[in-house]
Length: 323
Image (cartoon, rainbow, N blue to C red; front, side, top):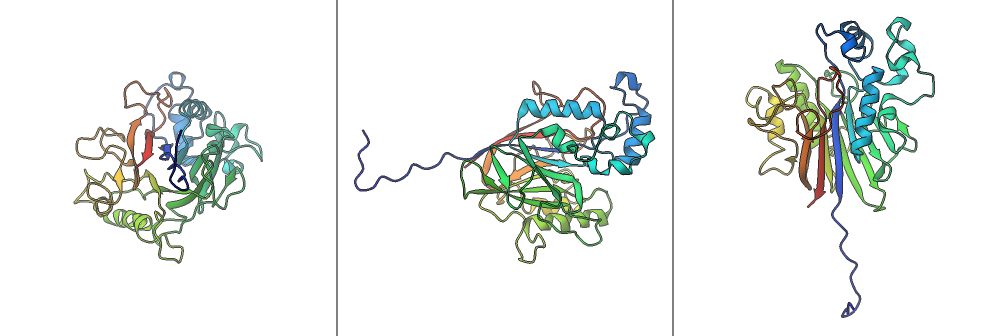
């Protein structure tokens, strides 16, 4: 029997645990592969994906494989980059629809993000960027300000002038389902691509929205909560490109040993490259969590997304616990 001198204090809550995934679902060329050996997806289909689908996930066989992958791992939070938005189907020529989601799409149908995750998730996308979205499992939480299954422009963000349209950094405030009044801030990042100094400068200004000022008029960074989870495709390898890429140098001033934020995905000169066999550009980082990650198609004994030659990124899956 527990005896208390005076009032008994409530027990401390269990540390928050979360399974988070970042996945750039973009595709690349497939060379001269026979489409009959690759789920019907060959050079002609890759050309259509490039011309009409933004090289995003839209091939139906790959969509179904991705749905099975997510059903198996059941993450709490997902960050997508370059996922095709089905609302663009009316603009796709009829001859470019065979085998793609637009072949059967009708107004009101779920988007690709909704198809691969299912109705157990709520999805919010970045300002003017419906191909960059965060998703949260409803049993884990819900987005503040989003009252439907899909909220386009549902993430806070701002365009960086002269660095493309829309927001490349999106902030979602997720209220925890089993802890009303408690929140986690999740930031989806998709840095501008490119190898020039101006490309790196754009990424640096975008990353500054995460750590300095999101551009909402309150001089607050995107990661401004008591719990901050940052994930996405940063389009730079902070260790392999440091000294030659200002955006890599900027990240290392804010993330890493001795910094407030830490990498959960592998980062370093000895990290197994997860992009193109050369670089690690897809990352998960936080300030209050610890844990490990695995990468589909690289980490042994873990599920792959698909057997098709399609994706040019590999999703990182991280099991994290608050410390």
